[in-house]
Image (cartoon, rainbow, N blue to C red; front, side, top):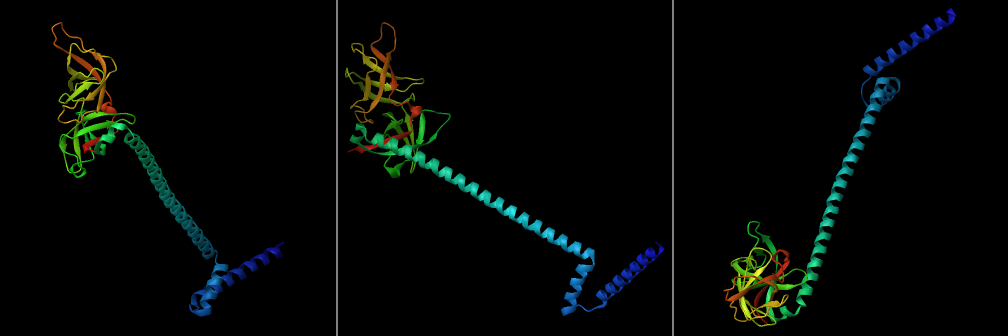
Length: 276
């Protein structure tokens, strides 16, 4: 047993002496050519710290590479998400344009518009403080002029919508038929009785100065009259809802009229610029 212990001590001493001599040689040998390469290889093999450091550097390099790849994937994912958003937006715009084209095609096939020249326009702005006016995206360069008659389109029906009260180079302001300052000469389609259509707050317009002798029918259409200085004859305006009750000494009837196209539901307008 004692012999074995002595042998182990001798082996340890020999190993210590070997590593000491080896380390000194590594320090004193010049760094050049083959010697430098041999020193690097032997250092890596026999010195654990160098090997551990090398492995750590390799690990950190792999981590750095992985992080870069993740960042690159994230950047590509962000770009793809933006492209998807753009595709969705383009699709939505295309669908809206398709719907608009369908509405305008339907409107152009309606008989009344075949009588007049004009320009289609979109609603560019509604003043939240005054819902009886709108701004459209057409102006002087498109042939729109002051007091031009305006027909509204709600997706199904065409009807008198208002008149141009302000003109600009590229935009115009429209006074709608429900404004209290609006007025137009109109007549009842069946009886032929003429009167003055006035804008009013609420759901109905007011048709004034209809003779007491006129027999008014509910649902009767109201159409622009030829005596109007602004509106061409033949534009559908609304339908009779009821006759207002008054005192026994009234000299004419006042009718409540439902607009043919409600101002709040107008999607596009057709501004009349002349006769065909």
